[in-house]
Image 1 (cartoon, helix red, strand yellow):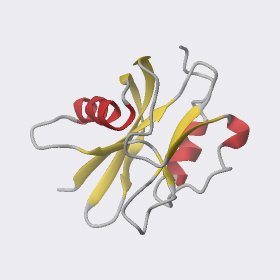
Image 2 (spheres, helix red, strand yellow):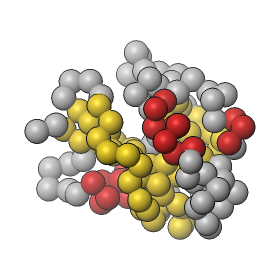
Image 3 (cartoon, helix red, strand yellow):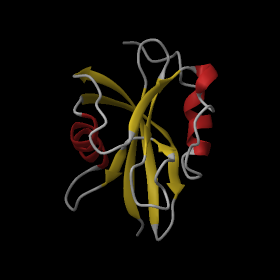
Image 4 (cartoon, one colour):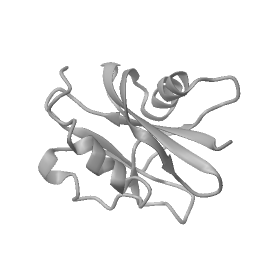
Length: 132
């Protein structure tokens, strides 16, 4: 069974996507990703995603529909991404170098990590559909 990493495609009412710049490990530092992290034992994916957004961004999110299925990562991990919207708080870069809200025109203006890039394309169709 694959180990699961969850990611949040946080979209605001203006159709912008929140991107997070990795601080570590060195081989991924500087690349951009969806905020999230590993699912802990006994935790379901959605609960893990809510916890990770609180830890990494300092916000409470409402989890929406899943984007695609299992996106393969390295070393037996898969990434599962959900649309999410912030219901409480303002995002802060607690574990990342920087956070950036990207409009549709700016989506490819950052260097996405290779594993996240195909998911950006999948999320793109949802931008503008998510209401605040």
